[in-house]
Image (cartoon, rainbow, N blue to C red; front, side):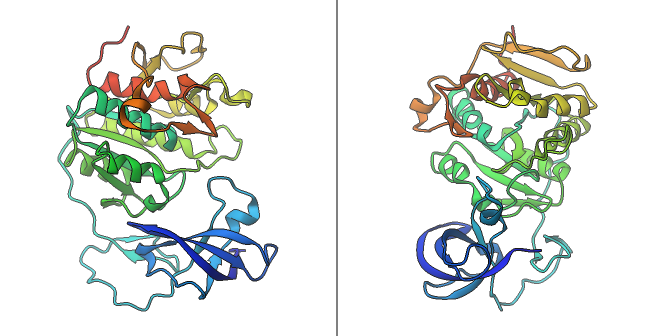
Length: 338
């Protein structure tokens, strides 16, 4: 039931820190004879060579997944493991577990601006907003479970780092490959506060979704809000908003955000950008503050040479989606609500 298939490495398609991309020919199973994209993660071992036969997990392509529709190449590494000093592994008690070194943590989040993002596609407008409003401030992203686990899967992170809009990534729990590693979100937030001036928390690409009210990867936002509050911060939530999503449950304020707001036990600030004036807030807990913010993501793509995308839609097609992330950063950095 693991979707392991033999595959032949046809050619290399590029390499960057953390991952190498290939084109594979699948040799067995329902995809036999098909060519599919493949990835090899350096944390798990050295990448294969063209012409080599490998084992790859093809569950994503076989299931017809979008973001996750790539074959993941299993390592064939016999190298020595580093000395175990911290009793800390990623992917523990699985055949792919490997040792990691936990990051040092600051003592508190009190006074540290924290923004919680519901989707990975909010990361780019959030970092761009920080770069526009507070040039020179270091931004750290706390990468939680709820989407892709490997940081190397994210093209967004690579672009933002290259443009000096993102200083560090802290990979939490079973997520791996960040500049810093932490065993959980609490430790991850404290580690991020030690290296940055603004902390963003969110998930990797490809949010998990089952259609159930609480059965989605976006619930990681509630965990981050509760953790940040417990550690002394007053976090700001960027709600998932859309006027263009064809699915009714994600129109206006997404049901993902509504369940997150209900599950967030402490009072947080919810940023509502221009364009959210008609969003229905009825039935949401009164312990939170729902604040209108007159700042959005308009012009940030051109300013920093970025392209905002989510579910195939760009800024011009659904501005409120991206404005929510920018507005949350503006609110966290001291912008006035209205």
